[in-house]
Length: 584
Image 1 (cartoon, helix red, strand yellow):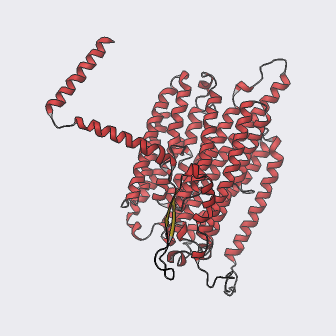
Image 2 (tube, one colour):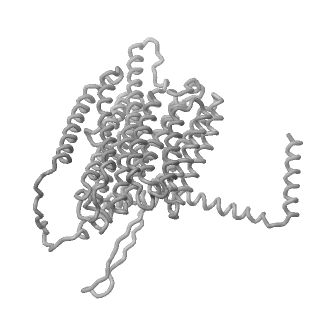
Image 3 (tube, one colour):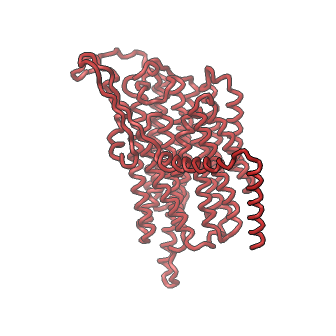
């Protein structure tokens, strides 16, 4: 079952991305089609190999092959300096993660090193998942890669880190016997994932708010969704902790109640996390494909230069809106249902009466609520700035709808997400653990199915039977302005600026103001520019690499070109080794 959950997005997203790429790559890019398809096919095969690998060695080989093949996709437009930089950062993350996984495999051979193996797995798989502060490659690689590659990397590749975590370093995987060897292992590992998930979910969506590039916004949104999944798995580990079980043999009924409540917490949160893996795969994959369609038709992903695309690209715009609403966690779409399961598990944790579980439940509920509100604001910005209003550039004004197969695959992925509603209903109806929540969940799922059916029928009516008579154009009520232009409307940056200013202590935005100059009757253009850097990159990784670079530059002084000096250094090294051998 676990393999199917992670294998289905690879196959479905691979087919959808391939269909989209057949129309996405045009113009000069068609000269490099053999290179693109080679790396694309190798990436999909490597991902399938990761899921189907029978042992640790084959898993690691497939994992490395997946990283190398996908790096070829990131470097597709290698003539640009930013793309080469993104590829270099991505390769560093891939190989650093592989090194951590090798150390994790060594620790797994010793039952008393379970915690060390788990920490190495968090680093190794977290570099692929995008756990903070290891997420810095996501906002660099996704804008650089072609949209079909970004779709399959975000929707199907980065969740494979959770597959590795569950398979190798959790009690539901291949090594359940080692979990009893380390005291408090369930509590420690569960809290690590919960804390990482809270920081990832809130931080990811916070840094998505000020992004002007549409694909960079979606990349930070992936960090947020991976945080939601991490919170679910972390709460499931806490619910599996045998330390919460009663030990008094005289209170058998109370012990059974506690055991049933813990099972409900573990199963609800784990089901919600795995369901969110599928929802994120289908919805985020479709959103990246939609961003690629916008780039193909306008030549830019800068939201402040777009606008008005809903009239010019109605099918692409409609698919983007539906998928964004689903991924925002708004009811009654299935993106809400997967988070609802985690909500219910967190409420069960508060109900348990155990201090640790109560605090974890309260923390997860608060983080999910805050994340949901910020995600709605981020996607409102993406939809409004890109598809609504008036075009803010000549390219946006002259945009036309994409070829049919480009928006059809986005609709297909959205339909896959709607089909997950039926799976959720079946899960509620057939699970004894979910019995307490089955009634409410089934009602929400049925209402969601009905709303989804209405949306599908309206879409079919709109696309299959367009109105025969076009409405005449009327002047817009100008509210005192004669002939208003797009320059008088809010941009995407202006829409989210109050929230960015509210969180300026965390985001640290930089403002650049270019004032008016010249005569008041004929002033020059003024501009207000705001930039928000990734705090993990600017505050941690860049200073760390700068320190190492300076250290290596000093060590470089030893390479002075003198053969006698090199022989002298070798003699000193040999003598030191001999002294150490004799002392031992």
